[in-house]
Image (tube, rainbow, N blue to C red; front, side):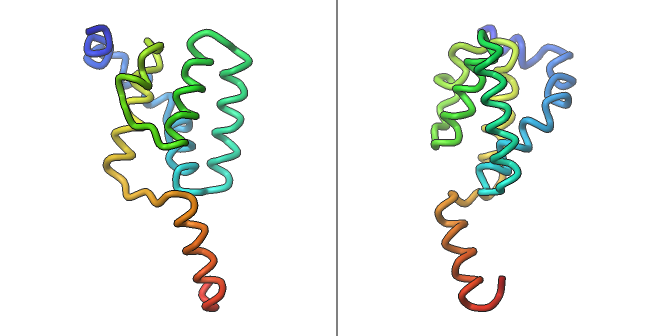
Length: 116
């Protein structure tokens, strides 16, 4: 499988390091962070403008934001950026993420209780 070869390629770790900002923005957006959402929207808009694999990457990010987690499906049209999607999915599995609505409800509860 091409993705397995790419994952084991020595330059992949470096590529992921260069993409740390993108990965973090997606994770923060998933946690309901407003700045993360702004950055991810910029990332998606730029990818759509750039076209090609960047547009496919943008679509994969949009699908992650709507809850899709199927690695094969998300990486289907990606080559160089598949490792970034894989890293995002790994972090989603590792980190406790609340959905945006639960986070908004939690903020509202704290505000009305005088804690936020």
